[in-house]
Image (cartoon, rainbow, N blue to C red):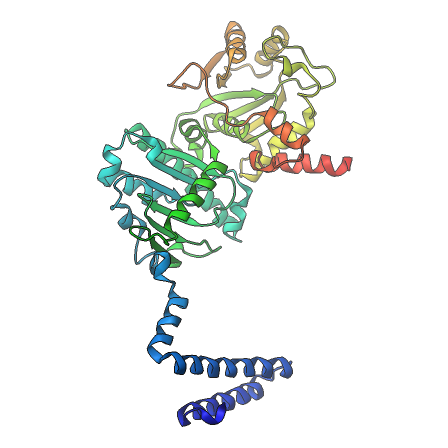
Length: 446
């Protein structure tokens, strides 16, 4: 076969062989057998490629290689460019009927898009605009960078985006938001169920330098574009629903633009925290964001002697109270420590709200200053507690739901306990400290 090769190809192979031998000698290759076997395969590949080109015609072979390298137009791939060459806001201007975005934060892009594109100005159906960001509570923030400082910056960018989206919603823009509990597998932008732009994330890299693939699905039954719609919708179902206004208020302390807010001198939040999950964490951060110092009260502190509760019967059961006061305190402190919250900004205390005639006067006498209780109203039980606290001349600030008398719980302690007992995924619903404590308990019991 070699004898049939043109002189130029033979000369090229001789040159490559000479370079291979010279490289072997110069770099003192430690494994010559593997090195020369690889070189032989490389040469065979060149010869085989030439033979294919010779039999099919050079132009046909070149076209084939181009499709292999760039992507087949049969599947709707129209271009591969740097993100900076085709920025997402330029693509978003084409939006006519629907918009889907999956990313880590994308604050600047989302703000400019929602404010400047005509479709978003007139859209009144939030279901047509779906935005999914990485959950700032996710421990997989660590995978975005090996640098601890950069990890904090990534988290704060997501928080800033959440606050920005809430402001846009207050300004009248309509959209849905969910948080992805892990590092998103792709960055996806889907416009009108037709145009798809996707890229991957690399740790410690600038997203603008990453390659972006553009797919079109119009008039092409074989296009992959519709499949990316299915991919997004599947990821959307796995996303975590959040109350955007609730979360933005809880996290405003971490948003640079909101750090000048007025704070009460001594605030308080409380709960059973069985176990301490993400919405509890959000509630505690709400109290810390709104107070110069925040008391974190753990109710039903003695699980060997829990108080019965007619309004919420499960509060008084052993099944509903598996973790001790010290377990729960450690869940809270480890989670706050992970977020850089200094110990002087909070204090974790037992709080016997089920025995209010003793616990509330004792609370007042222990701190001898006005305590502002922050509460979220989910049911008649919270209304009952608010009345008890106010009856002892203590101030209560209840979160304003705006839409109804009660707030919606997206994560509950009952759900997390059931997931733990059935050995299903519970870790996406709890912060770092809870993972550490429960994992240590399980290891001890195994």
